Length: 475
Image (cartoon, rainbow, N blue to C red; front, side, top):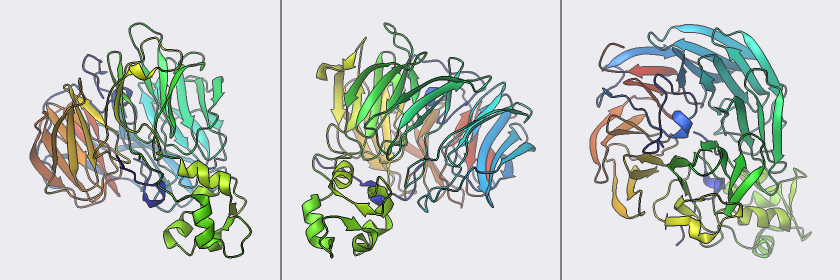
């Protein structure tokens, strides 16, 4: 079944609570909250909200595509403004800006126009916040905004720009840096920033997924990394690889989610290559017949010319067969919404580890949501698909009639409700159920690229120019 959306057509790189997994009260500490689940345990979330309804506070912030996180009574966001990389802390109760810190980039790397230098989401706890700026590296601040440490990283080789976010786990800060070449995953000490381990990701290219921590009953804690061609498990404490499985993904994004001993993921891919053969491309575009493609030659196709840097993996201003074929392979293979139970696997997982696979209406950017034993995905056009998490059986497909645009934000859930934010600023609220129903659509009147944060009955939404806090009762 063909269901590919090639990277070259993507405008933005952005941006589950397992049944039985625990949330941390009062915290939404990373991209998509507790362990990337997208779920909060609190109740009392509103169905109706807008710039004039159920607004607890609104705070203006500079533009950035990172999502808000909530920890220690703070809401943290990052932004970029006139060559400065900004980290801000807002009071979670009032929205008042408590502090703002600035980093000057170590370099300026040109990235695709739809991304921005503040795309990765912060990771926070009661002691403060850690941020990642691809043009600088990692930086840590205390709860009160004092400098704690920095770890310079880069420069990176990524035409579209980096988008994976750091996470905090086991006293570590962990970051995945998949790029056109030289991909790696690194862990540093949470308190000091000193290196703990670093592992090269040989063969991994251009992916944007944030890792998660998998804690199965019969095996030690593992770091799960979704890449463009494989799913990898690393020992959280040492970085040693435990197992891997091949997948097809047109540039992995979002997060993997877990329930008990089972992992759930969704990748957009295809049973057929999304590009023609290199020989066919040469016949059509190789004007000087030198056996390679220049930027000028590829510009004969405006879309391919605009994304030339995606194909030019070694940045030598030409695309050769090896580079073309590497990109042609993206998304080819065992793609889909997938449930996998690795047990205490080692090396390449046996095919029997895959419990089910579903290959229709898969999103390109938004991560999946696992909530109350239902697996949800949302894609452009407001198309919502729900599956039985135990079997992969399709329960319902439909649309949010009031929000038919593009979707970069990932779905989140709480209080038997699912929240879906479209790029054009409309947030659909579903009644959480396999046979979901649309309870309402709320128009904020401004673009939303970031995934909302949920915390204690409050919805924190970042638009192009502000962070909103919505709620119906006093904190």
